[in-house]
Structures are given as C-alpha cells and as structure tokens.
Image (cartoon, rainbow, N blue to C red; front, side, top):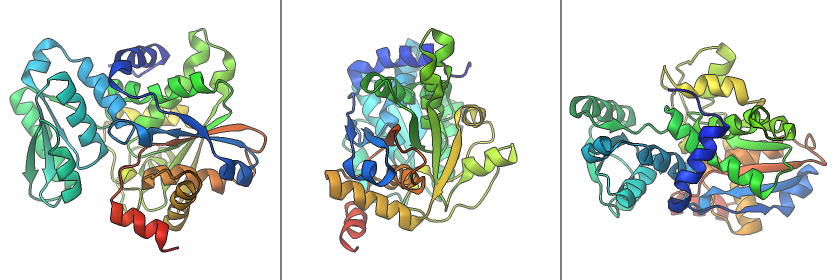
Length: 329
C-alpha cells in the first residue's frame, strides 16, 4: 500500500467527519508566557473515545469491503486503540474481537465492556495478546486492525493536521508524542507534502517535533540507528507511547522523512506538564500528552515569537494515578 499523502488524508477527513468530533484548538496563556511563543493546544483528549486513535480506526473500518465487514475484525489492545476499534466497530455494525492480557486494567476492561465487542483474555503480556490476535486473524481470514502499522490508520491520524491548519493556518511548529509513529507520521505527511499538492508552500515549512519519554525512546533510537531497534522500555507515565515497534512498521520511514527534530522528557517533566495543563485549563491529560507539553517547555525560548501547536493526544488515565500526580505536588 502507498504511504499516506495529503490527498489520502483529506479523503480520510471527509470520510470520518460524521463519526468523530472536531476537537478545539485553544490558547495556553501559561505555556505562551513560559516560551515566548503563541501556544495552542489541540485537545484530542476531548475526542469521543478520549484520544486521537478513533480517527485512524474509523478510517480503516470505513475502508473495508462488504466481505471484510461481514467477516469482522480482530485487534489487540488494552488502551486507546482498543477503545477506538470498539467504538467504531459498534457504530458501523462490524463484529470485533479484542485480545487482551489477563492482567489488563479492570478499569479499561470495564470501559470496553460498554461496547458490543468480544473480549478474549490471553495469558502473558500485551505482546502475547497481539501475537495471538494476529494468528487468529490469519486463521479466520479476518482483518487485523493495527494501532499504527497501516497507511490507512496513519492517514486517519493525519486528519488532526487538517483540522489544525483549518483552525490556525499560520503554524510554525507542532509538538507530537511518538510511540509507534502513527500520529506524527500522519500529521507530518500532511504538513510536509502540502506544497506538492497545490497548497501554499508555507504549510510545508511547519517544524514537526517528535516527543518521547526518556524511559521509552524507541522510535528516536531507531531513527538514529537507521533501522528499527529492540530495546528495553522502562515504566513511564506515557504508557500510550511505550514499547517496541514492529520490524516492518511503515511509520519508520515516514518518521525519518517528516520529523524535523526530537525531544525526550523525564518522568518528572511529564508529571509537571500534566499538572500545569490541569491547573491552567482543567483539562485531564494522559502521560503521552504530557510528553508533548514537556518537550515544548524544554525548548525554552527557541520558538519565541512563533505560533506553536501541541497535540494533546489523549486524556485516558487512571483516576487514582492522575489524582496522585496533581495533588501530591
């Protein structure tokens, strides 16, 4: 399949529009004051399922043939991707089976049980659940819905950029959390390739900054090595971006092409960013979103006088964990 481009991303935006929420782009006075930039927050934590993942999942499911829809889909996830597939498949009347590790968070399991999907619990960790899900899809002929390793998923995530440029055409930089690379791959593919599709060249000059937790910088280390690397990930508040990358991930080459710079954030910096956003705006954001905010803060005055967007990629975080972050400091 061809990598996403502005045409496929714009098509995705039209396709998914009736099924998602156009999230707001709001100013942050405190971040603007600290950086000297005009800082805007793209609030994907207000998306229907609490994260940007609904965009890619919806785009993928809408693109299935009648035969594929009839057969149903399979995925593996304990987090935002699972919620996205569960919601989208239920809305579209497509049977979905979601594989999860037996020790998955009871809160996440409870959320998934709100949807008309089949949950299967597998011994071992999330990797084992995914391996089992892929094997099941191969055996049954069903489509496996990857969280990031699929051009249609990446194109769906890129619709965040379509909305941002519509809301603020004069962006100079965008900060995006990176795990498997689907979100930044989609956003970067739209911003960097616009000049070749009859759009103003200014759009392609937007700086795309990849943001990762210090405890799991897998995509950054892979880009530095020129190949996808295997490395141990330490525990991180940014659980949504933690873990390995598939050896054949389409997002690797996309990230190498569209990401201009990379920044990592410590656990302390992530927590402080989450507190800062909550205390200013009351927005509950998850660790992955905190990574992007922390990365902007670490940039100091680098973007002073410019207009910068930070993608708040999601707000699905355990209540007790968030309360501890906010109240204990």
